[in-house]
Figure 1: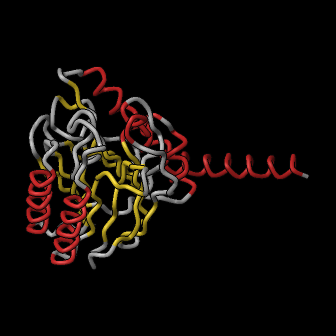
Figure 2 (figure 1 turned 180 degrees about the horizontal axis):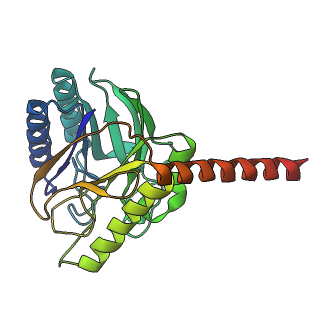
Amino acid sequence: MRLAVFQFAAGEDIYANFCAIKRAILKAAEQSVRLIVFQECALCGYPPIERPDVENLDFKSVELCVGNVRELAKEHRMYVALGLVTKEGEACYNTMLVIAPSGETMGSYDKRALWGYDLRHFKKGRSAGVFEIDGVKTGFRICYEVRFPEYFRELFRARAQLCFVSFSDVAEEALPARYGIIKAHLITRAVENVMTVVSVNSVSNFQTAPTAVFDVDGYVAAEAPLGEEFLLVYDYDIPELGFGARGRLENSMEAMAEKHISAASRAE
């Protein structure tokens, strides 16, 4: 499956963001991409870094642009995972919306690990974030969740083979140490769960998380240049597991089984 992630400088202007998203989808279609994934809050801008808040967000414009993205997905027979802000009643969510090649919604994933800015603007999500895409069990996670192995262990238990992590993690100056730490988290999530992990980040300021592909052994298979709009395309195949990967997988499965048996015994 040919997949792509697209980093760009999102901002407060929803239409300008949509134009960048459309540009990416058209470029991806030229390269026969089957699945394209965008950064956190790509359509709306991440508050308060790329937009001041969500209170004044024009959700009618959001809905209109989502409709246009659906049409693009349908026209180009492409899966699209779009970062945006959604609203349910009075509650707003930091959402990854997954659109099928038919243009219909497959489902969505709402960010659950909330801290700092997120607590001001969003409610905690509840969905699992696992989808079947062309026979590949695919998970989605958002930004801060990369700090917590438990969110990715859920994907391991669900037998996910591929995971996307969408970020809007930027700073007013280059912070190479922070960039390295987050990159290390991504590598670890890939290795410990024997899962290909793909990240995508905004370039609205200095990037403190990469746009990159990490294989099941933690090696960087592809990485976008820092600080510029870029479509990263990668041909994903379900990997043949080597000696080390098989050992991590089998020992993890055994440990989980033992934990389950132990819990059942205590319950009796």
